[in-house]
Length: 309
Image 1 (cartoon, rainbow, N blue to C red):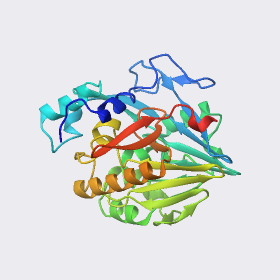
Image 2 (cartoon, rainbow, N blue to C red):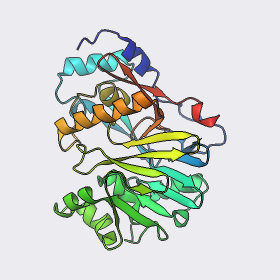
Image 3 (cartoon, rainbow, N blue to C red):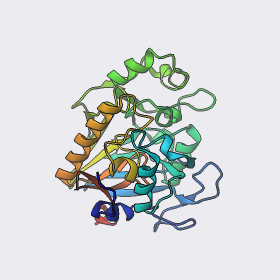
Image 4 (cartoon, one colour):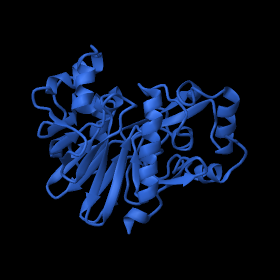
């Protein structure tokens, strides 16, 4: 692949951090969502699909050093640095975002993923005018710690006391055999009540789709409203340049790297062909955009106002 300045690089460059420190979206509260690094971001952003409201919640953000140890494991330092430079981002550090999603459909308030801890997701919900007790369903895309961390409080109590809990059967069975500390503390206590999902199963307006590779049972969800559909791609692609823009690059967090590449191309191709809005769990907040097929890969086109009309 040639990494001279390309149309794809130019498009990706438009996906830089959406707001400068201290800026805010109209009607949206701001908070220091990072671990004390002093940079303020909005806490939530709502979009509509007709009769369905979808709100991204910023449950946390942090700066991570040496991103090439995470993304692009199968390319050399020079290539990683060049692609980063072409897209106006540094190659020596990155900002991570953690974006659970609240889907409101009728009386259902469905929370998809829960962030790193109960404090983060509770703060984001409260800023959006909701409380953990309001949640009727909790749906997990997979069981990495930054998705299950908010299921239980520090005292070991259920954060979402009135909600039913839903997760993939394949994903649960994998982690149940690993002796993983986070799983045992956050998910195992819910085992008796978990409602298991498979490809094609529905929770309200959400429909599950297998997207294995990032983890053995990773799921994505389409959200269908009266005026369109939206894809919650979870961790299918975890960076708008180093993952969406370079779908063949290996990612350290992907358990099966080749399967993750195949899944990434399949899911991103679907989003591009259907021209559907996409929310990514780790995309720059508010995490929403579109996927465009460009050259032999894709480009992330940040949402502007399409879902507010």
